Amino acid sequence: MVTEAQRRLAPYASRTAVLCADLTKPLPLRSVDGVFSTATFHWIHDHEALFAHLAAVLRPGGQLVAQCGGAGNIARVHAAAKAAGVDLEATHFAAPARTKQRLEAAGFVAVRCWLQPEPTPLEPGEPFETYLRTVCLRPHLEQLAPSEQPAFLRNVMEQLGEPVIDYVRLNITARRSEIGREA
Ligand SMILES: C[S@@+](CC[C@H](N)C(=O)[O-])C[C@H]1O[C@@H](n2cnc3c(N)ncnc32)[C@H](O)[C@@H]1O
Image 1 (tube, rainbow, N blue to C red):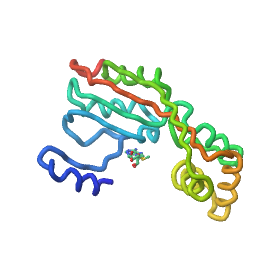
Image 2 (cartoon, rainbow, N blue to C red):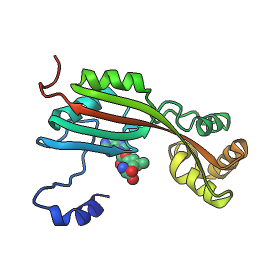
Image 3 (cartoon, rainbow, N blue to C red):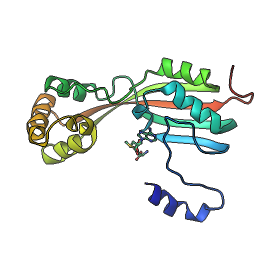
């Protein structure tokens, strides 16, 4: 992804910097004009720290626009995995009200957070299995021996029935306060 971003942003190289960094730690950046993120924040468990790291690099008045898995995201898939023997909370699907509080505490204003159900139908059979194996259930499968994985996947698919992923997205828009981070 970093290589692809460098390629695409090459025409703007004088105004952009591409780097690979861990959002659980302070970011090695100076002031940026905006933060845009998609499908990533739910992998970070400590959202207080995450929003503090973003606020620390976003210029006063700078805009945050983000989307990630929100409360209730892929609940059917997780329930089926749990019933098939793997109970894993690898992700943090936050609720809008709590997210708004956390953003305001980190120094954001004009915060809007809302859930958007996005049930996503997939092609039945092999395409559905591949999607579950490589995306939704990848952290679950990593907990199992390779010999146990096919039966687990079959079990989850049987329980799910229709090939629909019950995505619920958390949308976020906010602005960095002009007066800096609240004490
Ligand atoms: C579902 S992908 C989304 C990728 C891309 N934003 C997109 O929409 O195609 C989730 C991304 O979260 C990133 N990620 C997970 N934990 C992270 C962390 N602690 N710091 C930075 N990125 C992280 C992964 O590297 C992965 O690229």
